[in-house]
Picture 1 (cartoon, helix red, strand yellow):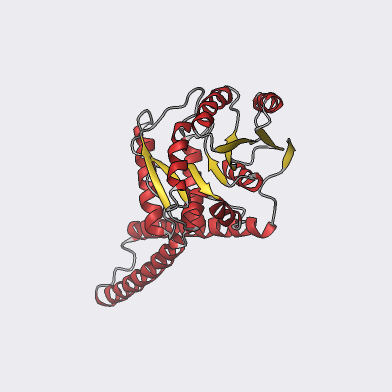
Picture 2 (cartoon, rainbow, N blue to C red; picture 1 turned 45 degrees about the vertical axis):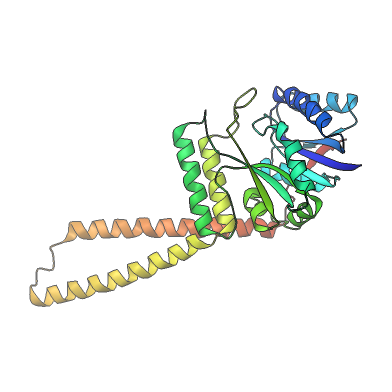
Length: 308
């Protein structure tokens, strides 16, 4: 019998885990031809998440868990899950039931047809989400698709059903600064997209603040695009050209009209503007340099405290 490993990152999800486990039991009965194993990755939770996972593992041999020594982030948890997944198929999904487990039978059916290597999901609505957050999310997908070679669909979730060949391809990318949505698209393989309406969390509150999502978006752009560096270069060339033109204007004006003192307010504005542009460009270059610096350290993506 083929095995399917469900990889479930958890960070302070003690309330959601029982609901997820109950839903997965229903799904398993609908796909008797698959032998499921649930691989929970405890991302350094501070609540009773690990305790609940241990209790589930004691009563169900199909439950496995990995617990990090601290919070390394969802990307590290996904990577750890894929590394420790031993199944013929792997499913990555959230524990809060915003990724409906009821879609798994349909995903498996699509994979069994042999045409696709993975089945991914995307939300077609953002009901229940703040409008400003939805606006920036859509803009992010538009920007990153124009800037990079990665194929990232608007509303894409980390909820995916993948063949072993795709999992191995993802694991071959061992970069420290990871952006899974981009990696899924970059490795290729034929993907079928399933659309569904947004589902709110079964319990608790999201761990993703607006600031965390903004940083995550920057991580994605920097990880899969060098376009910002090209933009910086173009800005530099344009400013140099404009400064040369202004220099000629000033020289000609001084020769024809004189009046060398006039214009100091505009001069202050120009200097301030150029200083701001220089700091912006330096900051963009610094972000890329910092990522390269972290890669060269060759630190582990995560550290395991305990696992069964």
